[in-house]
Image (cartoon, rainbow, N blue to C red; front, side):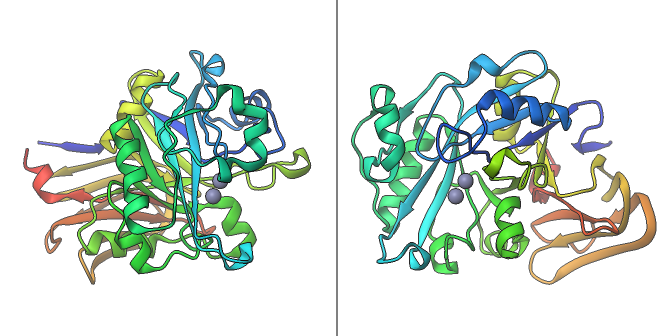
Length: 329
Ligand SMILES: [Zn+2]
Ligand SMILES: [Zn+2]
């Protein structure tokens, strides 16, 4: 029997899960973001302005979902920001109308706070850069129905010790497109691999983190998360995110992925290499010039596996990790 991991009968929404607008330090209005992203084939944008949790659901219609989100910074307050370690997390709200901050930091909200203080609702929990406080912020977020993504760990100067001790994460942003363009350090599947190998069960996502300086497109349309839904509604998009029914890509798309008789069957855009990665140094390659259909035995995989599709232009598609025990049910 076929067990679909990426089901071709679903609609695979094109989503940008990391975006800044004029509400914080971006340069476009949410309306302009919607218009430009829809013109590039997107169905979903998470409006994750810095410290501003704003309900943009007036933009949601039958062709577009505006996810209610926020990017929180938890800073160590070094003397100079270039030396400052930080944790940046995106919170995605189950309820599009929930704008109650689970962990406000008026200090971090800084210049945006004055503009939004009339709608800034919070219970006053301040954020500090300690393991306990970071995990408490995430615990509160999860309890309030937010999925929590760890953003751009390299830009943040996060070390292995930092990210390994974070609990309650839903996903790791393995490509932050804008930061990758600027620093060439923010494509980091190795950190995802490290977390999986050491027992973290989380998903992986890509996002733009676009600010659109000068109202230009720089930093947009490079880090896509494709989310499988039956119908394009807020609840379906959030539900599929929660269940891990998505993959991410900087180029090639995956059209179908299933397991049958311990063999993995993949259909994708033309690729030059498909990698099946499992625990530690367990991997299997299929090489070719224009691979669009690949079958690989799962034999030898331990605990979990994930797939990477590499095209000839440097684009990569990454699936989440799938656990062998889940395939049996
Ligand atoms: Zn950030
Ligand atoms: Zn950001």
